[in-house]
Image 1 (cartoon, rainbow, N blue to C red):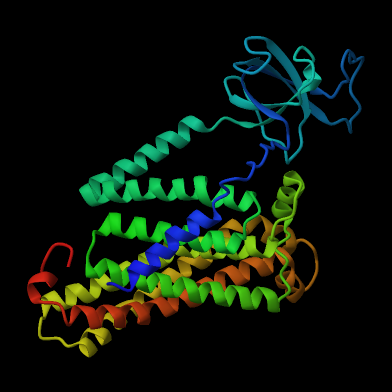
Image 2 (image 1 turned 180 degrees about the vertical axis):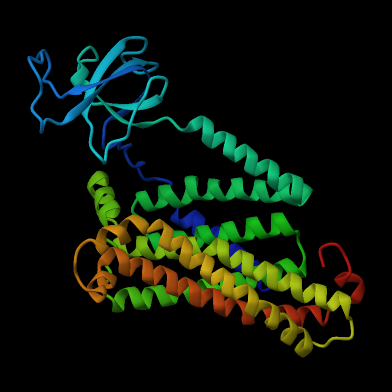
Length: 382
């Protein structure tokens, strides 16, 4: 579809204009210090004692226990040296055991002083890589060459996020404009690389683009109407770390656009595929019959897609929901809180876009498929 060529050109131009070519990159900030890898060689549970203090007699009944971990650092300024750290055992602190691979934070002080280090987390690289390998294997086994293409498209999508979206936002560009350009690039690359250059794919691209515009407009209108600032805890910490201002509400809207893109791709591709398969099964169907049959399929799909989006956002906001439920205030006040209201706008704006994507994409697919020669409709890519 020739209409998509200027849109693709505009996407590339937007990325070129928004990329921080001549701007200094944001300084690397690690709020807890420089990360250092280590291995727990042993642990001892006992009363909390200051450095050099010795326990005499039985500890008081109300004394809090502490966990003393013996560690061997595997990198950083103290690589190969033993280290002993003590931290109180609290419900909010993780439990470490011998053999655990952990991450320490190093504050830049004397590497021989235990006070320069703190245990902050576990190392999770190996299990995450294994899970990623299992995911890739499952996609390739089921999808074969198309599955491989989907994985390549996924990798390119991450490259767009890592090397365009994040640097541009950190350099002070408009988060919403950056997200629109980045989402456009991801949409073109992912859909065409995975599903091929065809009229079917072009319809899915156009339907996705139109729905993204609707989601962006709705999010902008209702985030302003609800006086959402976008200044949640993570955004406030980011602004403090950067040392310069950032459009917090624009960052919220950017998250809505990028977050809805994946679900929209699923809906639009499914609708176009359904219409093309209906035409191939019965070439006598006109565009109205194709639209009606495709829309009936879409009604079933949209229910599950909206539920997927709602559950995804609810799962991401679950700690916030649990925390606010303990506040003892009425439900209306909880739902109106900044953190919860943000998720409501994300969910509902994205859901409206998904609902709209079904009739929009279906009618486009019906109009195009009904005019294509039967030999093209019967082909592998439609």
